Length: 212
Length: 212
DNA sequence: ACCTTCTTGTGAAGCTTTTCACAAGCGGTT
DNA sequence: AACCGCTTGTGAAAAGCTTCACAAGAAGGT
Image (tube, rainbow over all chains, first blue to last red; front, side):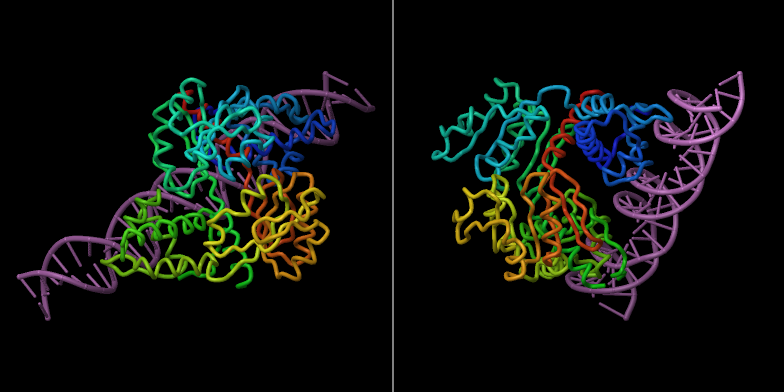
């Protein structure tokens, strides 16, 4: 159980995926599952599943497989889903609005406790239980509401400044939708979602496929 | 110039990123750029930049660096941005709406030529120049409008069926926002954007950082 | 108690990606 | 024309990730 080694990003993605598959299996009434089956439904190989899990301990029973229920719990703990994450959404545009009531977020323990924007037209607008606050309140909201995560749904030009202000106010991680690489202090994880990049990867591959 | 070898996904992502950095450099009046500078602004190393580019030819001048303008053009060609991509959006919910008028799409040559949804309330609604069409028309719209790409912004349960119908109607690539791994024929690229997975990667890393 | 069947956990092998290091090439200067 | 400072392009080395293959262990049947 080499709990200390660095875990690759691809491993983490797969863990997240296994968790989703486990939920489906449980919904179908499954009680135990083999690495083989998990692999088949999760788009990978049995050896990969076992190797991924082995980084965190040994959760299976030889000859039997894994207890769906137990493995689900373990994965939830590993992924940090056994607690509530308080999220602040910065940017109440289209993307912000899509993220705000993305049903799966709440299901997984991510609670959007505040929304801020710079647009005076939007400030004061009510989204569900929340009211959009002015961007100046970013720091005070983070402190008062004990916010852990910030979702950046702002234009590229604003992203760096907002990121810095958020980190200074105590945020521990950033989900960045702005198409720009932001600089943050060591130890603050940033995940980037860049929609144009995804489309470009797609058109690249289509071109490639047709070149053959 | 080993034009034939498989190009890794991470390389493609970086190319896309270099392109954006080049645009910024050009906006600042830069005319040439070294791999060193490109690396610094693009979150990687100079050797990586050169290796990435070397897969497609040699675009630089020793002692000088790269012509910003030329490299930009080359990257656009490599990424398939030297043509127009016709996109159909399936699912006119929050995420669909955010994607529909994401300004950078059009800038990069992706044109959303149609929107479909199953919800009778939404059908007929006007979004900018487009009107939401019923989902039954998916195939005919793809054929008539010569659609190349489909963006799946539908619930997980519908994703597989829509993907199959789209591919059968002639679509060449899929951008999938549904949190499920879809199965498609060999040679049809799929890019997945899974928002929950991003948040989970984030909370995993935050936990990890604090364990030290 | 033993045998059979199944499946995990894991070193080692194989493969891919990144980093290193340096010869080759370009432009300006003397 | 020779030199010098810089930067590319690229084999080779290093690091990282995935697949293989098999010993070890668990349950059930005889």
